[in-house]
View 1 (cartoon, one colour):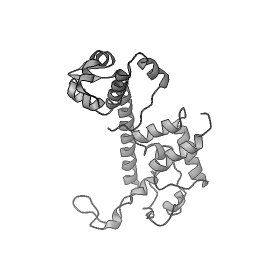
View 2 (view 1 turned 60 degrees about the horizontal axis):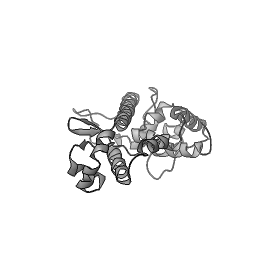
View 3 (view 1 turned 120 degrees about the vertical axis):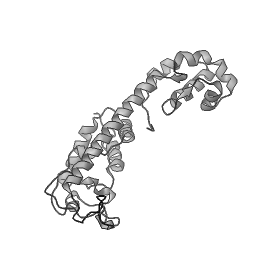
View 4 (view 1 turned 120 degrees about the horizontal axis):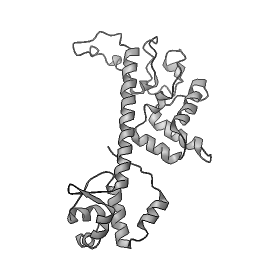
Length: 234
């Protein structure tokens, strides 16, 4: 799991580092950020490379490191980064479950009309493969296989994508496609806003025809959230 963005309480961070020397602050900050993506071994040479300082500098601030980080099985851990990583892991797993459930429902709703081989795949016909943007179609067992959305056609309305049938999107059709990184980005650009409520406004706009369906919800929705919430309170 790769974490691209983290939330930082500036007041808490300033208070927690106010007593550090410039060297201690530099080393602590770099180790703190590195702890989100890698383990920190109890090894002065490796810690020096991570913090981009000399080995002798690590030895100078050893006491600070051992106060700010807890040693577990030969590695240093920071309580804050461990809590955040666990939170991001749960978000990522939840979105993966939503995506798997969504694909399962869609596969039931849109069976291929082509004969399948012994492996369960359509017999060598590339037209049997749904395009990547087909994730816009939601669970409706009465729908026929929708018209493929190909490059060059321009952005289409939801009704166009399902062959003229006015299929209504749901909030899960938006949130179910967001990765942990997408959610973190939305939390950054729309601080204090409820993502599901934002998704409802977004979906209502598409369903009413006042907003066109995007090619990629994970790309378009966070940008829309930033524009929609800019200068407004939750």
